[in-house]
Every structure is written in C-alpha cells, then in structure tokens.
Image (cartoon, rainbow, N blue to C red):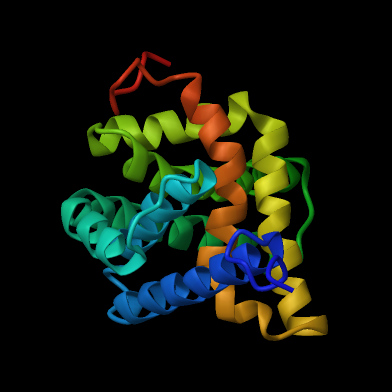
Length: 211
C-alpha cells in the first residue's frame, strides 16, 4: 500500500504532470485573451514543456511568466507576421476554391498556395519553440523554423498530425482533452523538438549552430 500512494509511483507522477499541464494551459489561455499576446504565451508554454521533456522543469507558474516577459517583444513580432502570412494564404486559397473556372494556370496556383499553407503550418509548429529555446533574431528564428521543418519532415508531419488528432479526440470522443489543450500538445511535441534542437545547439549555450 505504501508504494501505491508513493510520489514515486508512475501513476501519480503522470497525474501530477497532467495537473501541471492543465495549469499551464490555463495560463496560456488567460494570457492569450488579448490575441496579440498569443505568440508570447505560446513561447512561454514551450519554454516550460521543453524543460519537462528533459525532466528539468521548476515551478510552472514562475517559469511561464519569466519566459513570457523575456520573449514578449520577439514572440509578438513573430506572431503578428504569422497572422499576416496566414491571412494572405487563407484569403488566396478561398478565392481559388470558390473559383468556378479550372485552367492549368489556376491548378498551378492552387498547388502553390496549398504548398505554402503546408509550409506555413509546419513553420508554426517550430517557430515558438525555437524562440523559447534559442537566442536569435526574429528573422533568423523564422528562417531556421522553416529550414528545420523541411529538413526534419517526418517529425514535422508527426507533430502536425498530433495537433489534428488531439483536436479530433477532444471534439469527437473525449472533450476533457481540451483541459490540457495547447500545453498538452506542446508537451507531446517537445519530446521530438529537444532531439532536433540538440543537433544544432552549441555546448553549454542557447545559441544555434549555423543551419
């Protein structure tokens, strides 16, 4: 019985981790309400979950707000750039999807915009985690996110699929999944991301090696 209720029991460790993820998701939700701050909130979530993936996390709330403050400016710039890019890609796709005419040029443009949309999604998977993990300019962070997304395509597909599956699970099967929400997805992705990031990290530094 002593082992059953021990904090070393894997079951209770999992429950503890899930409770921290629920708290982390609540912090993300509250800090994302102004919309413009969503980038900084997402970066802060990844700052915590990347440490969780290494079993190096500290106090969840304190770590979240520390990362939120430190990355606010660059994360907000990245977020606004992504919003503009997403709006342009989405608008173009809608125009072509509603177009009744089908021509070789139209099909070529449609293919190009779908490819751009996929790359946009892949970049969005990496960019805030990169901002949380490495010290770089906005331009280099966004460029490296795209390069990593293409270079590590299987991982990019896996992380994108994880987001789709979690959403489907929450909508169709088990709504409490949304209690974990963004934090749960970031935690799952972080196990792949730390392995990828380690390939580009200089020893004892948050600076990236050249890509």
